[in-house]
Image (tube, rainbow, N blue to C red; front, side):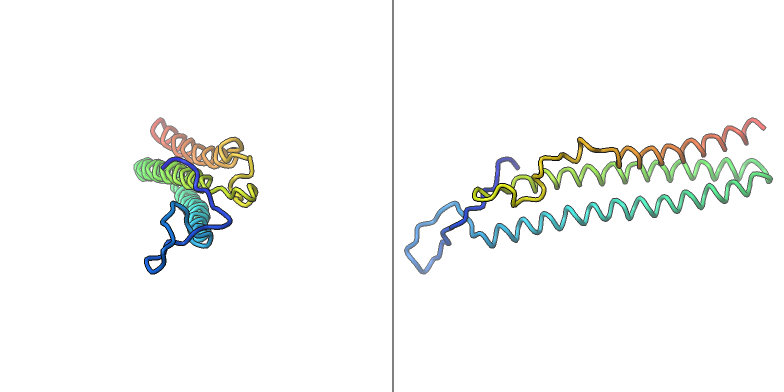
Length: 161
């Protein structure tokens, strides 16, 4: 979708029982409710991103901890466990990346709402882009790559020795 959704301070409500002419304007309350729905989706996705991230962090920590304890045993369980951990990391990375892409898409949609009488009414339009200060996402991806590196080290150590 393209174009701004302009929330007018005074809107005409078309009614089939009156002779008010139909317009392209919507009521303030209806558009505000629609905007609130956009904000709820945006906040829900932000919350879900970090819930998935935390659960995958715990799962990978458990797998690495178990593999570290298996280090004294045969190499096959450690290698298979590390391959499982790599697959878990791949799912973690895809989950984080797709979650952020949806979050950015929802944020872009929320930016379409514009109040002509108060430009600061949209909290998403603060002038700060989420993509310009993306160090949190890059740090989260870095942690995933640390786990990938740990699994590769475990595979290399157990395959060579």
